[in-house]
Length: 487
Image (cartoon, rainbow, N blue to C red; front, side, top):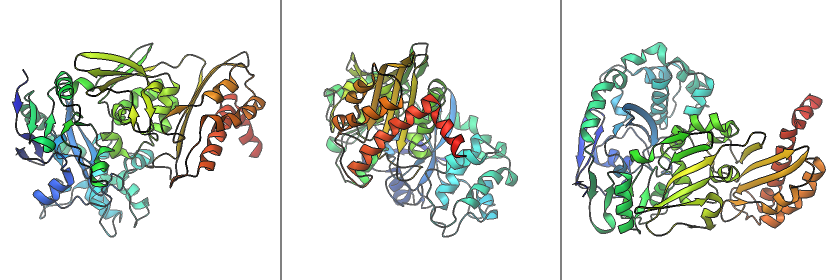
């Protein structure tokens, strides 16, 4: 029998917080501003897009303590048991000297109206702690999730590069007192299940994945929340009643990453950020896509398993994972079953998941030697934008002939879906421009996309066809030749 605790416990700046009354859908931003009067974190968009609410959350991972930037506006307070929340107020006292990040922003004129500045400072703080001398690319990636309408980013980038000239990172309190903070967090982690509230307002934090399986089998109508990068909007934008809520984002049992010659297995709770190094090493073709999934705050909170479980037709990870032949392990109670990812998505808002069943892990086969593979994301703006369409392509070519083809798209149908008519038009044919052009009409058989705010149906269909052309040109080296001829 799992022991239960009826209070949520975490560190907030220097103080320990214990809450025995927490609304299941209370956001961290509301808790900070309305209950603790820590108003440095701002509400700009309430959907994890602008970064004005950015705070740091520190969690123990394998005995180490890592601080990451997250969006407080879509993070639920209930997800923070055993964590350390750090807000802008922690950096410097009102009567004290500026923190090095703040000093750099002042010196480089990185702030004008100032509304977005606290969030930018916290994003740069997270960057500085892991990279004391960041370069241009690191600074740009760290700031993907922060929108600024005043400065044009150039002075903010200069500030990011110059932080260490205003102070030493080893003297920063979060670094200097890391061991003491780790000890405090370990003391908060007693291995108990957290339960607060009743009925629809009930909040549950399982003690383990086995505990989760038991709880969810008994309460299959509850909402599972991991990173809340989508579910948060259900509450802040659509005012949905999602209770009772089971928070699963910090379950140690779902954090594993294992690699072998056969492929890679990701626990459902592995975030995009934690998965990145392993994923891009094994599948380097996914590097650009991975760095364009939301902003850094979203990648720090969102999980690959959650992206799959949610079943969105415009999720970024299903198309390439389908093309690679991925499968998911679904669990209900003590029972497990494995489903091919392409078969997991049934219809819009409907997945092959029974009541009380959840995604426990995803297996991604290794890319066979010689296979050509690529993934392309099409958006209105390059960074931190939802896909208009996302296409993934994998072909096996031997002696100039296509032996196998797997093509999958998101944003083209009610679910992530393979282009089987296009695949059929390619297999057995020479891998030539003529074959590609002859296969293009088959996209109209596979997909009947819709028109919406992100793209028209006509644009989506033409873009999908052009991506196949691009994949062929890049795979045959013709794209390089064309560039050289134009130059």
